[in-house]
Each structure stands twice: as structure tokens, then as C-alpha cells.
Image (cartoon, rainbow, N blue to C red; front, side):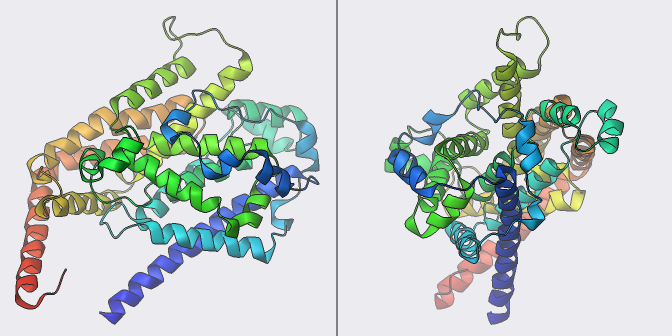
Length: 418
């Protein structure tokens, strides 16, 4: 047992290290983007106490359009090299402490755990790194990386996402926190088991809102004052960060039909060319609308990125999700045995959610080869699952059924809990 525990501890530590280094790299870009402007922490802390300690429930804060910064050539000119930015040891220490605290808030579920959150964060970082310019710009960018026109065009093509490191930090942060305190059962069961929490969050997106509130309240604690002072130079930055995190985490609830319908409607308004979807709005609102919905779909795709990666990665996480749901059923925390629907259910998930989502990533036009890669893997995994899904499901039932029965026998004999 000690060796096993040490291995788990070492893995957790490595994940904490990776997430800390990733967020630190993004934080350096945030500071570098400001150039010579310095944080005004006191102004932020005193401007809006409700923002620090929470006001309405997150679901009520979801925005149709989040306003990202306009392109500013002067800001680009005075921007530092992120590698040259020095972040104080105190801020680095607070960042690592925050990531460690978030890691400890994740429960020991088979699927919804800190490793999953880290996997989602890795996908977010990969997609952000793959955001590209249109092909007709490539030669121009190579030949004139600092050209004002080129930078402005790149900003517009990527809807401002590439120009704003704070948005990128918010995306990675949202991935890290999105399943904090997840109890291993869906929202329907969570609402039954925890009626006070369900009532607080109006019986919608209960787990997602709880995760966000826990993570946000922790970030606003006094022990992370210097971290906030470095991350947010103005009240407007704090407000925008909050909006991005709320929209992103709420987007991970893919079961709520109303939220899904609203997101689909926003996508149509942003990208559909037909007369029914077209709306009259300013060019700036149109760009921000696209940025908002692309960010939401980025984290949605990352949340299920295992379905759009190599077969062995898909199988690993598919089995873990089955284990989590099967364990909940055998322990009486779920009324539905996943074995009764798993094989056919995966086909439906591919056909009606995964593959359409992968096509949207391609349709929005900013993720380059990654969108093709995700779509191709999704189609291939669906084909493989269609051929082997029933066999694999039977194997998982046998595996976890046997493990559960073994745990019950041990428990009856000597009190040991698996």
C-alpha cells in the first residue's frame, strides 16, 4: 500500500507542477501584454466587494456576448517578451498553493478527478496554441511578423483571442476548476441527494455552479491577494475574467436542454449565413459574439477531448467513466445500470454530440489542423466502437462487477473498505 500511495502522490504532484507552470507561463504573457503599466491592487479590491465574494448565482451571469479588448497597435509595440517577465516568488508560491488547493478539492472519482481536469487543461492549451491565421495571411506573417496590418488582421481572424492573454488564462483556469468537488453522479441525482444545494442553484447545472463558486471564493481569499494583484490590473480585467470563467464552466453542462438550445442559437447567429440566423449588429459585437461562442466550444471539446484522440486514450477515459457510473449504481447512488445502455449510448453520443462538435471547431475556422485531427479521430473512434463496443462493454461489466464483489467480501470479513 505505501508504494501505491507514493505513486499516487507523485502523480498528483507532477500534475500540480504542470498546471502551475502552464498558468505561470500564461500569467507572464498577461503581464507582458500590459507593457509598463503596473497593477493597482487596492483599486481592484475596493471597487466591487460583490465581485470578490460573489453575488448572484453563476447561471444568471452567463452572457451572450463577452467584450474582449479591441486591437491596439500601441499595446503591441510596448509589449515585453514574456520570457523576460519576472514574477515575484511570492506570487509564484501563491499560484502553486492555489493549484494545490484546487487539486485537493477534487474527489477520488474514477473519471471526474484532478487528472481529468488536467487532461482538459492540456487540450485547452493545445487548441489555443493551434489558433492560426487564414492561409492567405501566412506568407505575410512570415515576412512581416511585426507589421501593424498583419497583427490587426490576425486579431480579427481569431476574434481577438490571440491578442488577449487574460482570455487564454481564463480558458486554462476554467478547465482546471470545472469539476471541483464533483461527487461522481449526474446533476439529477446530486439534486436529490443535496436538496439545499439544488435549491440554491435553482435545480440547474448544480455541480457546475458549485465547482465555480468553490474555486472563485478560494481565489478571492486574502492569502491570494498578490496573485490577484498580478493577474488583474484593473476592475475591468477582473470583471472580464469572471465573465469568461462563468461562461466557460457553465458550457461544460451539456445535459441541460435550455443551455444547449441557447448555445446552438448563439452559434447560428455567429456563424450561419442564412437569412433566419442573420441579425443586425455592429462589427465589434459580431466579432465578440464569435469569440464568446468559440471559447465555449473550445472548453466543451476539451472536456470530451479523449473521444477525439487516439483510440487507447479514448478507451482509457471511456472505461473510467463507465467505472464511475457503475460504482454509483452498485453503491445505490444511481438507479440506472450503465451496462444496459453503454454500447449503443456511445454511438448516439458520437453521432449527436461529439462529431457535430468537431465539425463546429472546423467550421469556425481558427483552429487549423487541430480541427481536422479532432474530427478524424472522432470518426475513427466511432467506427471502432461500433465494431467492438458490445464486446468492450461486456468486458468492463465483468471486470468491475468482479472487483465490486471482491470488495464486498473483504468488507464483510475484516471491515476493510475498498
